[in-house]
View (cartoon, one colour):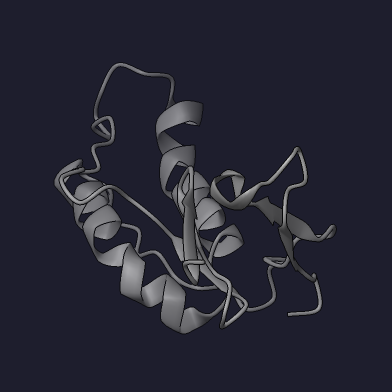
Length: 120
């Protein structure tokens, strides 16, 4: 069984019991320009929302910093001046265990599972 699993925008490393942001290899992040005609409440919250999401799907500062560069560049290209930072005090560990089922190894309706405990 593979030691990493990509699910939506998160990569789970099952052997290290860690997780980090995931994006497809040819994906280029793009955000609306800060000077666009969107309401200020929307444009002002984009950098905060990106930072919050990446903090929530990064198990450590190292994982956060390894993944953030293209998103930071996309924000700067869209006119935002904020720098994304890792917040170690944020609650980035899930409250409930994360259960990963591998359908490739299921036999007769029995799915082997791997549980990542919140106390990583």
